[in-house]
Image (cartoon, helix red, strand yellow):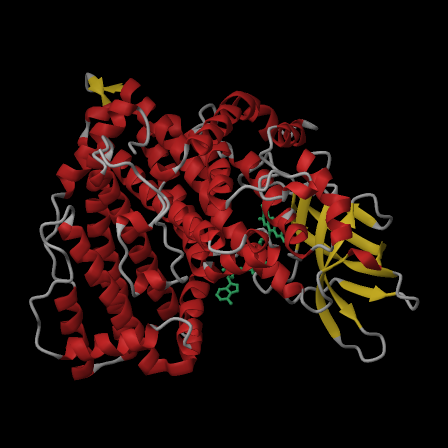
Length: 604
Ligand SMILES: Cc1cc2nc3c(=O)[nH]c(=O)nc-3n(C[C@H](O)[C@H](O)[C@H](O)COP(=O)(O)OP(=O)(O)OC[C@H]3O[C@@H](n4cnc5c(N)ncnc54)[C@H](O)[C@@H]3O)c2cc1C
């Protein structure tokens, strides 16, 4: 049996999945984890099981100190210092390891939100942009759990419109201190965090010029006040409060990065925030799915366990399938980041700038993971309630909490609306700048579709999952065709056509999801893994879903761009691209469910 190896992982260009084809060996999947990483995953899962789940009620009731103490316990095991370099007290591991910790620790959304805000958006600004002195001062405390971090960007009047903050910073005449005035909203971990990355505009008193910047603000700074906890729909155990800054004086040395460059910090860090959020959704969904399956096996109706009913099996398989796609995308992306860093010299590989550059390269994949992961979790939580009937709806069982908790993931770290705009906008920007050869690919495709149909399906007959490969090739063409028509019609005004941008983003997301799933299923099949059958069946289900969603979205794009004969011609081309043989979705769903029910968990 060939062993799975990660040495051949390719650091493909961000967004290039739309244009290029990859082999299974070129993408990282969870099966490529080495022994040490598997051990770390098992320790994170054990911590979640033994420390977080038993404290769930206390955390949800916001019993004082419980959540913070669990974060500190996670720190003792090194989980909070995985992204902090060793010279500052961290354990400085690669992105795959960081991904699997977030994945396996995420069984309770209140905890995973606090954890993500602390180790991701709270700590990374300092790791990436801090001066030597700032890092020496703060990072060892954050790594050890002595201090907890938070990120304060949003305000009452600026959430999505993040640069429009009203908080102001004024430099003293002698240049020694900044005075901050304003009020931040929605700061996660606010109730107990010790260090805040606060975004404010520096005002030049002479010219009135404003520079959007970031600052490190310690909790006990005079003038800093923490407002009352918000009463939320979900993640009730997490802390979310306003942060008041009233004449708050901080040393000038606590300016983070350069004055006027705060947007680089805010947005680069959000790429990681989005990635980690998607990964936390995967962990949460895996946990919810296992619960769904166990419940379905125990609940008897009409004389048998409801797990034997086809419609319950379909809930299990639909949940597992989306989870499989999200998981495959997440580890593939983490692997690409690590592969890119591995190509650098050892000094550069640990350079914060390089780390940032590699992650920024995958901004589109990070946004996809955020949107897809959060919507996948919503589906899983909903199917869990459906599986449990009335019991799903009452507080005594965790399903209603999963359902409430899932909703926030579509709001923070950039709403899913904003992230859909980012996905298409980022790709178009790269295309226009020539960084991604999207425009030549669109032109080639446009020329090709105007020719009589060829019999080249783009698939690879005889290969495992050849039908799915064919669907993937067609979906990629649909994405390029719809993008080509839309950019010809609207040119640079495409940004203003948000509905079209979002439809294109949906097709692009499906392509990335299906390709990641397909490559992983082929890798499993090639290695003769027992999980290959379930992975293949889920890939089959995804292929049908991709074709349905992509064709529908592309049709809307075309109809928004043309009318009359032109539209009819374009629709005929779309129909040609969308011609495929549907799978036996009922059979595939039963196959996935059979494996999941036997294992009592997600079947890969
Ligand atoms: C529990 C919780 C925790 C949070 N934690 C943090 C934190 O730790 N740090 C932090 O800085 N922030 C945090 N936030 C804030 C969060 O990031 C914002 O709520 C989010 O970015 C949305 O901003 P908003 O609430 O102002 O909504 P708005 O920006 O007003 O958006 C309202 C609606 O309009 C849509 N919209 C806005 N602009 C556009 C556009 N250009 N095109 C199309 N649609 C648009 C949005 O998608 C949304 O549907 C948190 C929020 C919550 C609820």
